[in-house]
Length: 293
Image 1 (cartoon, rainbow, N blue to C red):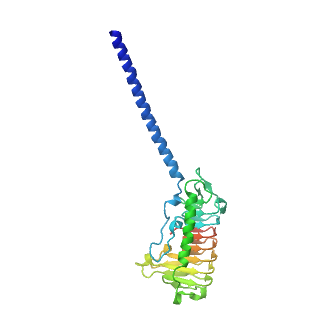
Image 2: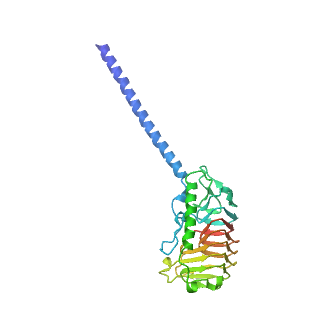
Image 3: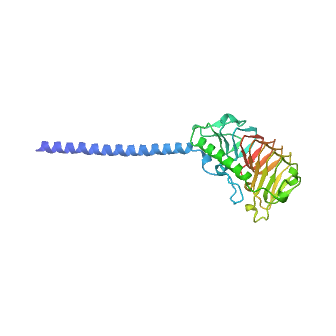
């Protein structure tokens, strides 16, 4: 009888120990799975293109403005190349598609492990550079969408009702010491700005809703050491330059607004802009400061 009781107690002890060990093992496994899930989630988050998270800076919110869509996730966006002669200063994201990273020249690109983007000493954090051949995350898809939105924005700006009266072919294409009220201005020629140009809001209170759209079927050029000046509450995100040919901004010149160029945008040495450079070919900078609105 004693022997049976002893065997029974021994068997129950083994059973309880096994159950406790199994529970501990399962709890350990659960903890390990949770930790691994967190690590994977973190990796996925790191791979997700930060340029897919929404606009950088400010965009026009008025009905008269031009919708940029996901092109607004970038301060510079181009199709064939974005080059810089150091040292430029860029605040915002830089995107290039369908061309690959080979088209990002002069940036001294710094790669990251997932190949989602690049950083550069010339692009202020948290800004990044993205190219169509970045294989990590959603970069390639994001860029394809943004390029399409850029082209749509160009077409929308070109399709706005043309300027009339003094806003049609103003100055024969030469804007000398002009102060321009909000509205749509249209030229069937090249436009040259040899002096400072002032864009004046209707009033300081209405400034945030005032919009300027410049429709130019030729080239746009601005002389060296001049400025586009915004007054009376005018905002750079509400100024749109739709240009069918090359845009050339002179050395030491300051510009304002969103440039939607069907071809190339070129900024001279020590030039600057508050706005965006959205080119259907290339963007070239020369120690240029580009600041998102």
